[in-house]
Structure formats: C-alpha cells, structure tokens
Length: 180
Image (tube, rainbow, N blue to C red; front, side, top):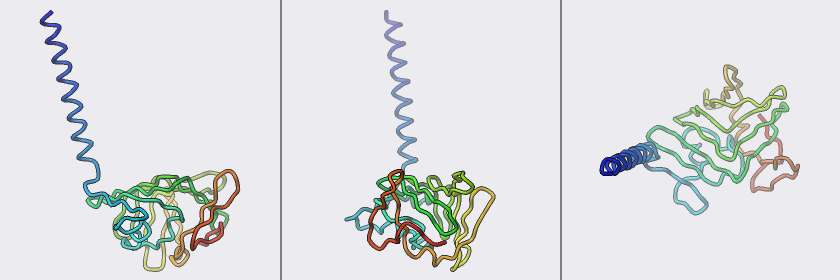
C-alpha cells in the first residue's frame, strides 16, 4: 500500500512539474509587452503602426478592432469583428480572416496568415508584403509576386459582408471595390 501511495505521489509530482514547465514555457513565448490598440487606448491604432513600419494604412481594411505586437521579434496579430472580403481592380477578390498574423519589420511583412486572394477560382494565401521602394508594394503569393503603386493604398478598403451581399458602412471608406 505504501508503494502505491509513493507511485501516485511521484506521478502527481511528475504531472505538476510538467505543468509548471509548460506554464513557464508558454509565459516565455507570450508577448512581453503587447501593444493592444482599442478605441480608448493610448497606443497607436493598427493603421498608425503600419505607417510607423513604412506601410500605407490602406493595406488593412476598415474594421480593425485591435492588435498585439511583440516588439522583440515583430510578431503580430490583428483582430476584426468578422471575416472581410472585397474586390480590387482586375477582378481579384481579397479575403481577410477575423485574425491576421505574421511578423513585421521596417518595410516588410512576412509569415502572413489570414490574408488570401482569389486567382483562377482558387484562394491563395498572401505570404509576404514588401515596400519595394517609396512608391511600390510587392505582394508575394508563393513564388509569384505582383507590384502595386502605394498610392492605391492611401485609404482602407471597405469590407463586404460574406454570404449575404449586404455592404457594411464605415467612415472614410470606399464602396466595395479598391483600386490596385
């Protein structure tokens, strides 16, 4: 009976130690100083942060509710109330998921998740966006890339509700189609 209790005690200790190691590891990987922007926060908005990294604010659609940024490695998440889609010149449909993530450093967004473009009836994830120079953005979809002038991104595009065809209304937004 004593050996059974000892084994149970050792098992419990092992489980607690494993949980503590996992908790410490998760805490270490968590953002040390997340910058969360909201309507009343003193932090810059997600749009303002994009501009601080050299991007025009219009690469994000209207409707961002907040973001986190881990300054140590540029990892970020951007949050919206719902998925967002809109069409751009050329017949391309862009889709932004409710949560967008990736990494950012001066003039470069990479490891992007949650942004896709529909080309030839297939949605392709946009992997990277780079400010090629002051006037051009390069969008990378796998090995393919396309340059667009940055003045096409001065204003944030307006999302269209997915599935019901009703357009959202937002301040300072265009109407359903963005130019690229």
